Length: 228
Image (cartoon, rainbow, N blue to C red; front, side, top):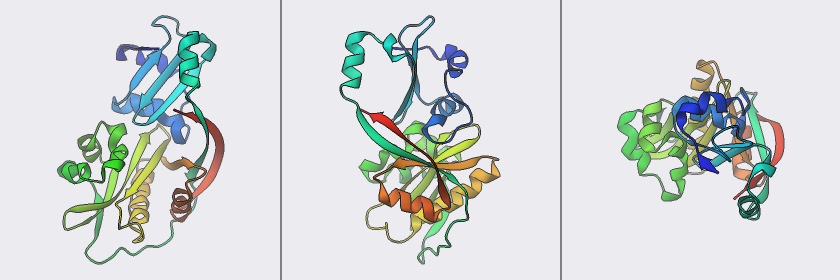
């Protein structure tokens, strides 16, 4: 696979679905934000096209078009995983945040706080090009105490009809309902933009599935994808 010049993106975008929830919104997000990379098996008349952003990638076309060695190298490492896509369909459960915690929309000045979350949570801002990109996007809500970011919910993938949501709560603050408060506020923003919130997670992510239900998301579809 070779990386493609961004000038050809409008034509390549037709390879991917439009107005779909979950990871299906990946191509729309890359087009809208400029964050991500495009790939194809050849520059002219490609048979296989892929788009990647953060820790997500979507491949479209005839995989037989991949060179045999490359195809074997990729798919031999693939692990099938069950994935679930939820769509907002009910009000969230009521939540009271602890005293001294403020839940608000992030702005550019919050980039350092966002960069300071636990290292294993750096994926939360990967689809926006880093903490500054997400903080400036207006697409994230956080729970703060004395300037420290304890939980954050954001639009992980920005589609034309759906915005796929991601959330992280810092260790030691995962029983305080801060994640739910952030997700609920974010969903209000998404609805105000005329879009519908969606939620994607592994079938085995019981914590994520429970939080999705508490926030008013209901299951739309299940499928199997390949993880590398």
